Amino acid sequence: MVRILLFLASLALLALGLAWLADRPGEVAVTWLGYRIETSVMVAGFGLAVLVVVLTLLVALMRGLLRAPHKLSLFFRHRRAMKGFHAISRGLIAVGAGDIRLARSAADDAARLAPGHPLTLLLNAQSAQMAGDRAAAEHAFRIMAARDDTRLLGLHGLYVEAQRRRDAAAARDAAEQAAQAAPSLGWAVQAVLEQRCATGDWAGALAALEGMRGALDRAEYRRKRAILLTARAETLADTDRDQARRLVLEAAKLAPDLVPAAVMAGRRLAEAGETRKARRILENAWRAEPHPDIAAAYADLRLGDSARERLARMQKLAAMRPDHLEAALAVARAAVDAQEFATARAALTPYLAVPTRRVALLMAEIEQAEHGDEGRVREWLARAARASGDPVWTADGVVSERWRPVTPSGRLDGFVWKVPMAELGDGRPVIEAAPPSGIAGGAAVATAQPVSAAQTAAPPPTPVPDRGLPAAGTPSGDGVDLRGGAGSRRPVEPVMPLLHAPDDPGPDQEPDADPAAEPRSESRGPWRRIRHMFR
Image (tube, helix red, strand yellow):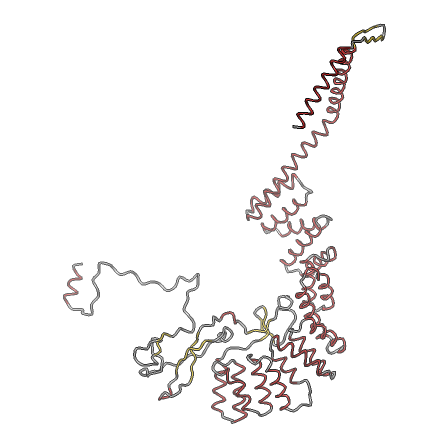
């Protein structure tokens, strides 16, 4: 609306101006080169306006003619660049889709149309990687590493290629260059950290960890630093004990639940006479996760104590986690050393129904030391051979006798205290052979007892079937419990369900019977053979 009003106002002013000039005619005379031109003011003004327009058009035309080659060059360059971008887009999409032929074709087009573009180099490298041409991929990454705008991308590619050909020196060099160029680059700092950990350079690993501090949350940073401090303290334990103690105390402060740090700190403080501080560190670690190494260090806080004093100390420690197996084992171990066999038996009683290997071995030791009953000792040793395993330091399928900061694959903080292959268990009931109570003949009874996944890691004992008639309370041949009299049939789940592997077709099916065939009969008389002759 405003624009319309302005347009109408402009027209009105122009009309008023023209009317004003028309009401006041005048004459304009020009004498030049012997010529005299006389006209009115209005015509002279109109002619001057036309002259200005013509001159403007001529100037624009000359300007266009002078700039035509440059504009033509820009047009062709823009057209070429657009074709190059389309080739790059087509190639990157082909790489994502896994089309090697289209990716290589697009990479060739992009190299011809946009040879110096960073995305062209990336497309060449990725298409070469897809085609398995490692030399071409590494060449493209080296070109990118030599440029400022693609340096980090090229170094990352060189690092990946070095890892694929198992060249640790080249991978380390690429990662260190990237970490120096960008200290906050996650993959580079992580690679430098893992490589220094693999070589045992704990001081360098701590420096690398400081470089990636901003990329980690507080808990993860404290955990990793505690592990590295503990590893360095272990290397300095024999050469610089004071420095090792300072390092491990800081580690125990950063991660109170780190068992190796707590154990080492407790032993170093106990050696220095700081028993109260050592006790506090070990108790905090025990509350987080009971561990036999913590119990052993707690028992040795004062070397001059008697066996009964160590037993009392173990009972105090076990009271902090009374429902844990390690608490019972710690008390039982101390009670055996103190010749308190009743206390040891009482501590292990809740775990005797389905004992682990350590529980069974400790019971065998108790039987040997208290009664010298070789039969009972052999019985417990046999149960130990069949019992489920105990937790150990496990990582990457490897079992270690002691904690290590780095796994065999180079992963920091990978060792876990657990039962090996515990994830294979499913927590289902297993059949455990147990002596009967109140059944004549002393036949074994198969009782289904639920166990945890850790206890199903080892194969359970196999019950021996009775060769005679099944008596009351014994399992029958078809896996049905007959305890409880007639009519009481309770199915017992198998120890390991029989499942076919995904790629196993299973046993061959029997051929389908002829639907027209007569049902088979037990009689094989002559009439039956005669009837079959006329079928």
